[in-house]
Length: 297
Image 1: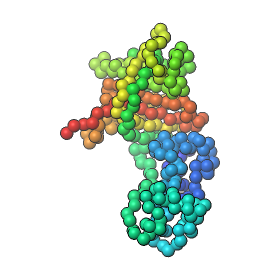
Image 2: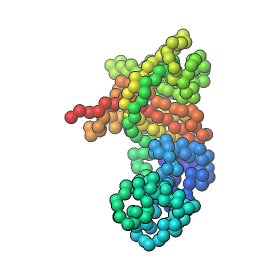
Image 3: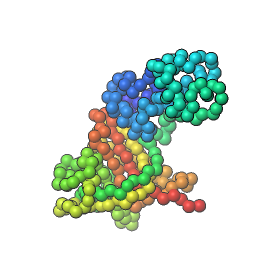
Image 4: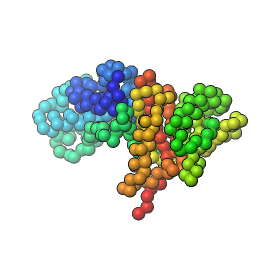
């Protein structure tokens, strides 16, 4: 099984090579020993678009060469690029570019194409893949979990331990969970003077009216956030110290970038989110969020 970065890199290359050979998610998943569902999820998680939509856009973009540089008939172009019928090609073409192939040939109108995706060294995190930040609006949500005061110097070791304890045992006491298969590791009350923070392994809940004894509840207000995304070839339990250190180093590097448009509040509050249903026995996916504000001149 390929490492996440190499898998995604190979898939992108195979798509470009197979645009005239009816490349699709099913064939790619078989080639790399994944279920089609999980390949679709990995692609969407990594690139924030569907693999089918990306293949369609790249196929239509590639067909422009034949359309504009040769006299090949539209029906032959359609068949060459894997469309069963001329009309299905024309409909897809118009949805993509807002104009039919015939009209484009006559008018020479400028159209916008979707460029091919590429992975860069900045997306490589050891043997894993790392993306971001992108900026998203996170609606208000509430969590209940078990809070722990963790010294900075022990956080990378202690946080995974208390997370496993919570997930296996403590979450069973929580009622009215929202998305019960989603783990949220919530960090707040960061005290830089005394060098500790409060870490709460938790799940999302509808309200904070039934907090079990020994548990705590938090409300995360609706916020614009920076989101980073991680894919590793391991179980989500095994996000180890080395991977965490590399992730935080990449996040801190962005936070300190004077050219960045946003200021990150990662020194005040942040959370990681793992949808355990997405683990396919091979690849773990994790998202990391912190509120941001736009910098003023």
